Length: 127
Image (cartoon, rainbow, N blue to C red):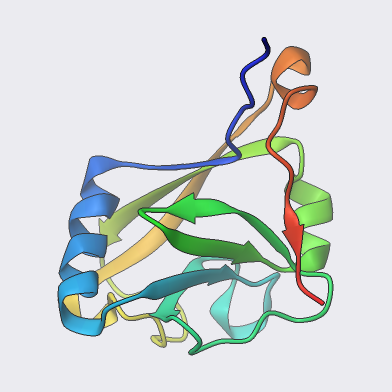
């Protein structure tokens, strides 16, 4: 039996920040846009605090929280694994919930192998 490959993971440092945000805000969601003022850094919101556009892609969950990316950005990065990380500093826009903690989420990417790509978990598309 083939094991499906996740498109998404998180570092321990990112999980530590997520636990803090869960304690304060409850259910969360992540959205990574394709550019403009927020750049391509993932933003963290209270669940329902952001509405994905039609055909945006939910590539997985982190600690039960959906991680959505812009539909065009997904087409560009669909061959890559996303690892959510966090660093000190303020990301562009400042709308993400971790900003008051002096942190900003970031994503590290790596390309899937051919074998991984053939066994990926499916994505969910917004309607």
